[in-house]
Image 1: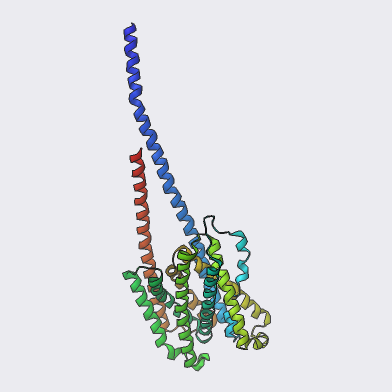
Image 2: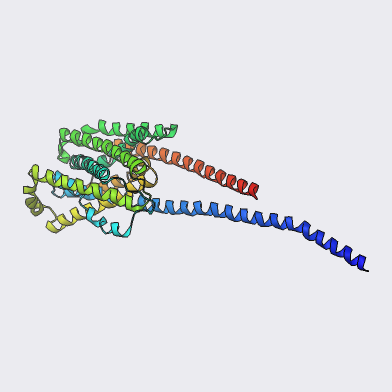
Length: 388
């Protein structure tokens, strides 16, 4: 009897010993799966938050740019004639962002660059912005708003070049296709100069050429500025917070506004502002409201543009900026009675074709990035399994 009980105890102990490794394996596997799920869910949540911010920036850019461009043309169409005032409102709306500096602080890991370096950076960008905004003002004054908006599509071509040399942006067949098509689109508008510059719209051919060249020059300058901003985000500032976007918009705008005030007094245009407001076709109050909402719209647009540079790239921000092309000419025909002839329609179609080519390339890049992220997650799971 005692021998039988002893044999039963030995067999039970053996079963317990055999089951312990299985329990340990199951326990280790559950830990590995938990760690892997956590590692996969965190990047996914971060990815969704990033695209939410990108979506908000896109809305800011599209709504702000479309509204600001139409209001800027309305200013000239209703009797405004001061180029420096039109330049001034493109940067003078910066005070609306001052309160945001107190609500959005820099990241805790951020190591702020030297004050002199940041001062030089913001001052340089502000001076470039002053000249760029002045050229855009000449373009809005001398060109129909539909032609002006289509010419701004050349920013994408210029920015692709500056991004290649400054930000190491890769060129693919689709990107090159986009550049060639946008170049053809701009050339068609240049050929159309004889039809646009005529007495029927009170713009001589000479002024049309000035407006054309200034808009083209402004597009090239702004493309360079965006690439330099992206470079400063990556190499100088290195702070991943919304505070960085606000500072990059606020401080250069202060410098640009001061430059515009100097230009307003040096040119003598300040003397004509009171008369300009009195002679404004719709009255003094609409004059002030037009300038005020133009200033706010440009700031909203700029935050969207810089935000996209910060989150993605300068080239992507320019692509989204091009998305407003179909909207502005249509609104221009409705509100300002611009002529939408065959050349403009072809130019618009080509500009949209160029835009979609780049968007498709970005779609392919996003697929590759998701594939790489999934492979990295599988590698982490394999390493954890081996450790267990």
